[in-house]
Length: 578
Image (cartoon, rainbow, N blue to C red):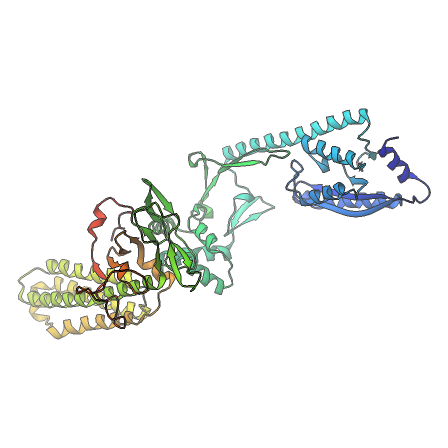
């Protein structure tokens, strides 16, 4: 008598067995579609009905894998736990709907059969009411055929899925898998539609990013205050997703079936093989706004050279101030945020830097903060020179217009150049503490001056009737200067300000530090002369170290409008166009 026959006699005994059959129930369904949402519950119900009729069976546990395919075993947690119970000799019988519920792969099915034989356990299938005897030769032959049929079923399903995908690409059909934040799936009509609430959030993200120079980190904080929970990574993905301008791409991935111990492999399809489904009715963002966002994203990438190859590192969106901004001038490796193990002092270090000619391995974060502050203040100080030049030019404009020695158009061109300098400065410093009121005052005055010039140009033949004295020019320029004074009050350097001002920082092997601003200017400093770093260099020309109580950056930080090193090949990219 085989052990399966012994179990059958114990189960069917009319009197209570002194050693009840220890059983577990296993239920599985491979899809979470609405039509099969109660399949596992139905399987368990059938098993409980069977247990009620056979009191000699003692139920130990119910194992359920809902919505998981049976072609593998490593991704089914309940199945793995059941195998552990069998391996420990705790199970005599598995009750399941059919053998296909246990496995859809020949290798896994044979492995389970060997495990059951080794521990004198078997399977009862509710579908055909059969207690399987794995020691019987005839039964083994039938089991082998069933295992092959189940494996063929999985293969046919895979082939069918690929054919459905091909038809979908030909017909350019969208499914529920093609939706993202801002869209919903209509199950009745089987169509994608715009979710107005989420779409408003998408518009907010793009407008903040483009119109207000925000970053994914700052947008994340604003959305969090509004009760919208989107991670910084999700915001970054939204900013580059073409679905929001009505361009849906399908056929972006493909797969190769894996069964048994082999995982199914997924591959990215080359972009030239993607299928575009153009849906202008699902557009949320205007093309122009989306394109500007892509140009901003491109300028905010950190590009550096390493081993003769250009690498592009996505802009870091974390909390560290100068992350993804600091690079070695020799090998192009980035400096990574670290803390000193003994003092917890924040600094930036380069890993695996021993083979590089640059001996500067670390820089204190506080030194970088002070340099950035100095760079911004120097930029602010330059506004005085611009305003003085504007005042001189406007004075000349008034005098020469009254004397009709030049045409208004020529003077207007000269004035426009100075106005553009101020406008560029406003944009550069708008995140450095410029209040909205100050910005508006500057813009208003520039517009007033522009209107006055245009009016003078139209009435140049009768300039004697329009009298402007020097006090008018002085008053107008003074208003602009007062607005600029609002910028000087900032004291804090945060991640947003660094992201908006700093394009990158290059550290050279001689200790020179090039802080390249997004405006095109470059701030120069020498690392060895910064306080807090051990070195043998000195501050002053006479060989003495400067007074630490004085501004340590006064004579060590210089600014130029253009760095001639931009024109030479090096480990960093050319500056952005002004």
